[in-house]
Amino acid sequence: MTNASTARSSVAAPLNWNAVIAFVLSAIGLLSPVGIWLGYKTRRQIDAKRQLGREFATAAIIIGWLWIVFVVLGLLAYLWILI
Image (cartoon, rainbow, N blue to C red; front, side):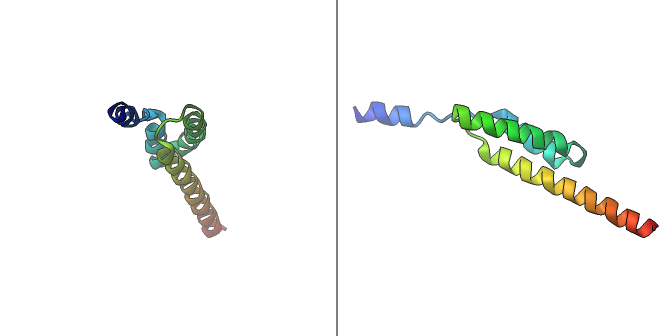
């Protein structure tokens, strides 16, 4: 009986590959808005279906927002120099 319960518990939940794709898209600076959107969407799916990959989705959201902040600050600095 213990072998059956350990066999069931050793089966891992499937990885949600959309979380990995969101992470990669967020890491690419120009596609970070798509990565942010996909990260939020994937995180809801992971919570609903109890899958793995929540860390990737959260990292995609954080990295994507950091890219956006970096671009906005860069544009502000550029415009500040022009004025």
